[in-house]
Length: 138
Image 1 (tube, helix red, strand yellow):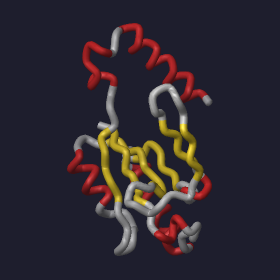
Image 2 (tube, one colour):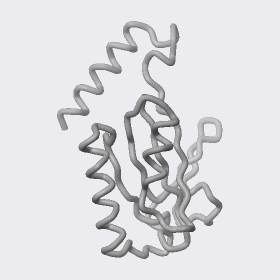
Image 3 (cartoon, helix red, strand yellow):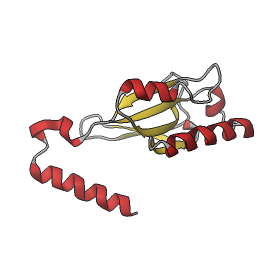
Image 4 (tube, rainbow, N blue to C red):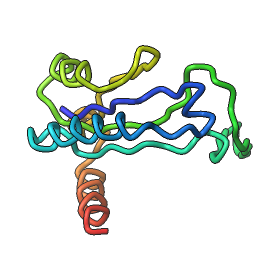
């Protein structure tokens, strides 16, 4: 099972405050442990929302809003994509993440092709596999 681990933004990440060398070192060690265990597929930090945009899709229209966005608990400061056997295993890994007292993460399972059932026709399944293969080459 794949899980996206969403690191919630806070006042510091939204202000563009970079992590300390100590935190970067601890995070690097944690990431290295996950890679060696075959758990970590990807992981990145994100710039503050002031450097981003949102697009809403009302009907056929498109509405673009540029950041910054209010700190409402839905902003993301970074993520991991991990592969483990269960949500419980994902939780156990993430409880070891070297965050401070004010940090919050969210863990969400990523859909696999099998989750879509009959709606994912053989043609759509083939397209999905082809696109994944092409994206993996870049």
